[in-house]
Image (tube, rainbow, N blue to C red; front, side, top):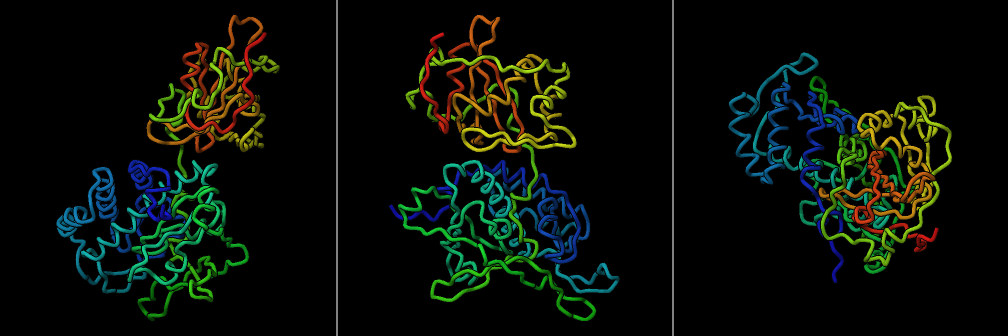
Length: 437
């Protein structure tokens, strides 16, 4: 089998709604020249240089969102936007007053600009969704390979990056995750340890290779002196020998998803709906729920009635100590005080009784599953069984850890319902223990 180059082959399945979410959460912001906004500002704001009004920005952004939602092409976007922008007067070359109060000849809408707007924003939106998906499956595929198109249009530095493999936690991805310039067509592909060995890839590290690079973002309209902004670049090897500096254009020097703050809205207290085709407890040879051993109810002081106060008490967090890291059998779970109010507000009242079990369920679960929901979003599910002294039968607590740290949970007593929750990739199989007490 040839070494895959397409991001669709190895990266988690791309979902257009993620790209739509990325564009929707951006707020329109006026700017005069490309590179004027920092990378962090780009993560929160949608901008087109010299748009001139929020109305123009909203029109362009809505056109991009519609193209994504409808699965339409660049031609559809250009054909749709051209008459609309022409009617609004944002078209062609015009003399306008710039922010410094000086007349300046500028290019507004044009076919080449619409091409650049479409390519840059759609690719950034898809890559933001791709990186978020890669983060979800980093336990299985922690290596990312940079992939360039490798044709006559590919920039030399981007061609040099083609094929280099870095760990997903390497600092290079904080500033050099594609797209890294206007019309950049590069992407990344995720690999597991086994696949690196299979295809003979040697992991690379950016350690000791970072440097500051000054790049031109425009020219002063009065003096024509270049205007510079500094970005972080890296010295990387050239295929024929020597080194070349890879440095993103200002405004592209940030991971489009890494700086994208969002809640994991799909992680809720409602019953879990799983994506079809995943493995179950039977595939792993695990015992039926009727045969699993329950543990004693956690000993804890009497908790407050108020759900938020109770959650803070069991997780030992507060406004002054907002984070707690809980060691789990797989990797630490981080509890955020800022999310507890959201948990308390959304939690159905009958689930309050399970609050004392949450820390133990995370720390000492019977099973941990990496499960995909109906929208193909992966989350870790921690499953534990408990027995209360006055209860006739044990019950299961399933804690669902969201991508943002939000915790939701379900409680089940029926064995068939419990088995139905044991779906996905089993990443923490404990010994098959059986009920014997």
